[in-house]
Length: 336
Image (cartoon, rainbow, N blue to C red; front, side, top):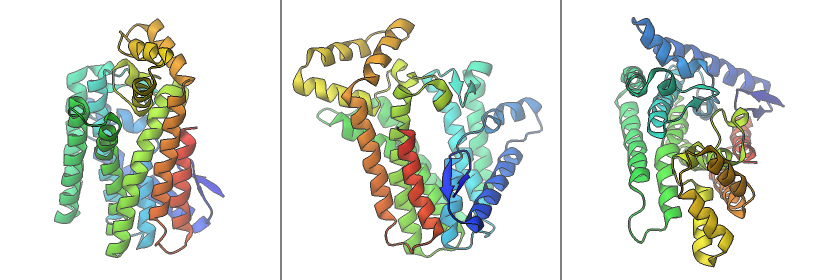
């Protein structure tokens, strides 16, 4: 059993390991090439997060999905580069919106160069992704456009909040299906489609990617509270500080509303306070880490990962399918 990539996926077959490693190495080269500019400063800013590393979760999924067709087909690696460039672009924009100071263990682009440079660098990455897409055909462009619309819609819905009478947890799950699940679904779809897999397989891997993407984001929600910066690569409690209602917080609020427990209501009041105050922020983190709401969020992560695994059932048994199943376990492991 061999560990492949920064995400730490276990692979049981040497041929599959070689294919995935070669594919990810080619993606890395493609990312560096796509982020070059004739203007040295643009290159520096555009490669800032590329060189910081990352899990390369989406390219990894492209490579595994491609195993159900021809993994050496010419569109596989470029499509993986497109998905990762799109993801990186959203990180530049997210960090501006969240006023984040750390990303992937390094200064965020906005902290280093300011918001304007960070936003424009994200736009630059989107443009480079579009340039590569143009060579992959109109269907690939349409898929990316639809996913990007869902991604932006999810972000807007998160900003707007749930409409009156809507369950905040249901609203939030819809938000992350758009913000995170949509692009991870594209990774599964591109890998299968570019490799020439049949339509049924493409559909399975698309739905698997979306469900896994939701589990992936829920694991991030847990990490934002439960981890230190070494584990997550960003400042713990960033979402808390910015007032972003992640799943553990939503479970806490639901429990407080249902039971009226004094401790829960007090913690909700603290969450509504000024969490830019480091002392208050640390106290809220400490209490949330010990609260059953965090464990409920972990259980939700497991449930979505299990649903993703079940979607794979119709696929033929092979090492690639086993690796995709192991990917579900890896996502759950991140959440503890």
